[in-house]
Length: 356
Image 1 (cartoon, rainbow, N blue to C red):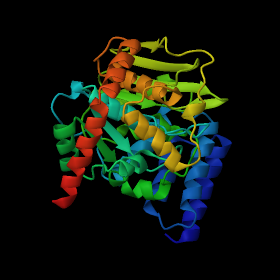
Image 2 (tube, one colour; image 1 turned 45 degrees about the vertical axis):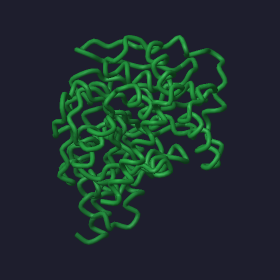
Image 3 (cartoon, rainbow, N blue to C red; image 1 turned 180 degrees about the vertical axis):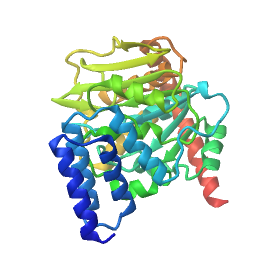
C-alpha cells in the first residue's frame, strides 16, 4: 500500500474510534496497519492519538487484550513461555511507567533489594521516561547490562537470583514504533509491561499509574500469571505514581486464588515528607542518592519508598506475611551490606560476560 492509502485507512478507523462506533476488529486493524507500515511518516503520532482516544473512552480489557495479541503476533513473541525452575518461586516486577511526577528510580533498586533478601526476581527494563534514570540507564551506571537473550536471562538468575530483561529485544517492531513516547496510561498499560518476560512466573508485582487495578489483575491472569498478582499504586500530587510511597493514598491490590484484598502498611504515614523522592533534575545528583542507599543508608523518604516496594515484592512471592515484616528484612539486607554485595556481584558477572 502507498502512504496515502495507509493514512486514509487509518483516518477512517480513527474516526470510528472517536465516534465510539468502532468494533474490536477495528482496533486490531488499526494496530496491524501501523505495525505493517513502520516507515509511515508520523507513525508514532498516529499510535499516540489512537491510544489516547481509546483511553478517554475507557476502553476495557477486551480491547487491551486484542491490541497486545496483535503486537505479540507481529513480533512472534510468546510471553511466560520458558520454564525456569519452580515458577512459584519467581516474581516479575514491572510497571506502567506513567507518573504524574518524575521520581528517583524506585522499582529497579527495590528489585535489587528484594534479590538481596533472597527473592528470585525477573525485571523487564527500558530507558528512562518517567525517571531521568530509567531502569536501563541506572543499570548501565551500576555496571550491569540488561539480558539480551534467554541464555543470559537464565545465567543471571543462576548466578545472582535476579535478571533484567531488555524489553526492546522482545518486541522490536512495536518498540520501534512506540519507543516509550506515550507518557499517559493507555489500554496497553493494563498488561503489556508485565508480559515482557520470556520466563514462566507465577507471581507478578505490577506498578500502575492509574485507577481500576482489578482490570489489570484479570488480564494478567488470562496471560498465565497463576499465583499472586499484586497491583501497587499511589495517589499523589493530583495524579498517580506506579509504586508504593510512604504516604496515605498508597495501596496494594492483591489477587490470589480468585480472592482480592487491599494491603496497606503502617509505614504509610499521613503527612510524611516525600520531597526526597522527586528527581532533582540532575542525573548525577540522583545517582549519588541511589548509590548512598545501595551503600547502606536507610534513612530519608527515598529509602523508605525503596524499602516499602522491596517489601511488596517479598510479600508477593510469599516470603513474608505482612509489608511490615518485609520492610524489616529489607532494612537488614541494606544495612548489613547484602545489597551492596549483590550489586557488586552482578557488576563482576556482567564484566566477565563482556570479556567472553
